[in-house]
Length: 147
Image (tube, rainbow, N blue to C red; front, side, top):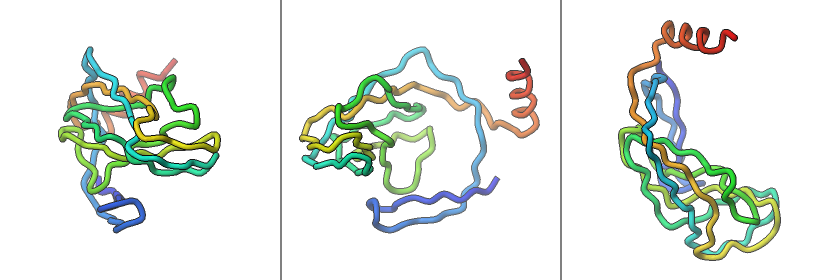
């Protein structure tokens, strides 16, 4: 199916790109092993409660064929990481990704210091299996949630 994706080419607030791509839903298998990666500030930044701000972090690498989600119990006292920022065209799960910036939601006013731990992400190794075709996907979901 054709979908529209929108992303920042170079920086947040920079060049905005809108692109039509071919995309599909997929099944995937998650491996038995994963890892935790720390999101560590790479700059000093004042934050204000309830105002989302971007913060530079020490660059991390997300391996190919992996999915990520936040570790909800590990966060900075002033707030939490809303999202990792990946600039440029979004990459497929089969490609290695690098992240050097996050969106941070402060719950209190204060100062983020260089090398502060902002959060932790869970990295799970996942392998795409095949396209989730509409018919097979719908029948699978109906069977899965019939109770």
